[in-house]
Length: 275
Image 1: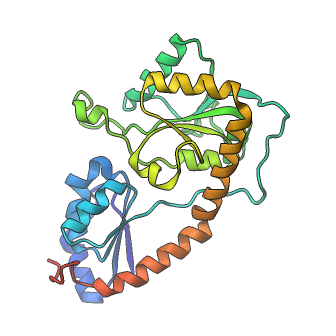
Image 2 (image 1 turned 90 degrees about the vertical axis):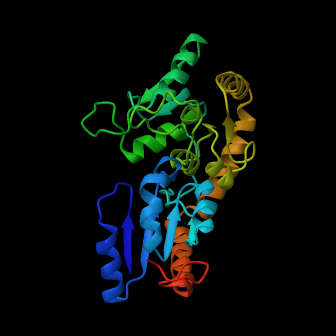
Image 3 (image 1 turned 90 degrees about the horizontal axis):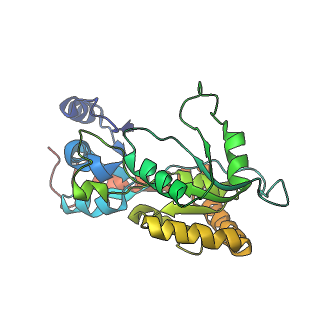
C-alpha cells in the first residue's frame, strides 16, 4: 500500500506509476483542499490512484465522472477521554476565535473588522506558531473552546497566486477541522458555511452556520442571549463528532475503503486500465 498526501506536487506521477506496476502497489491518495487544488494537482495524480480520499465533498463527483474511485473523507480529531464540561459555571469568554489572521486569509480579517465595527468583543488566540506567546497547546485550546459562549470558525480558502480578486474565488469555502475540534471539546460553534461541513454537521442541530456578515452578527447576538439553546446544540454536536470523527471510527472506515478499492486495482470505474 502506498499512501501519499498530495497537498503539493512533490512527486513525479510517472515514477509512482512505474513503482505501482513493478511492485503491485495499491495507491491511495489523501487529497486535502481540493476546493482549489483539484484542477492543477489532484486530478493529475488521481489518474493512477486506486483510491482517492478528498476533504471536498463537491470534488467527489468530479473524480467519479473521470472514472476515479473517490470518496469524501476527513481525518480524525482528538476526542477527550471524558465528556467535556465547562470548568466554570459561566463561560470565561464571550466570543472567541482560535486561529490566525494573515495576508493569505483576507476573508477572516474582513469578518473581524466588521465585528469590531459592530461592537462585538472577540477574544483572539493564536494557533499556528509555537514560538508565538499567544500559542495554545491542545489542552489549552480545548479549554478555550469549552469555556467560551461562542466559538467562531471561518472556512474561506487560503489566497494563492493573487486570485482573491476573482468574484468566484471570493465565495469559495472549504472543509476545516476546527469546527469538529470545537465540538469535540464541548464548545458551541458558529461557523462560516461550507458544503463539506454541511455533509458532516446539521445546521441548528450540531452547529450553527452563517453565510454573510449580517447573518453572523445576528446569530452572535441571538446566542449570547440564548445560552441554553447553544448548550443543547453543542452537546448534540459533541456526540456526533465522537461517533464519526474519533481515531477508531475513521480508522475503521479507512480500512473498509482500502479493502473495497481492491476491486478497482489498476482499473478505473469504467473498467479501463490506468495510464
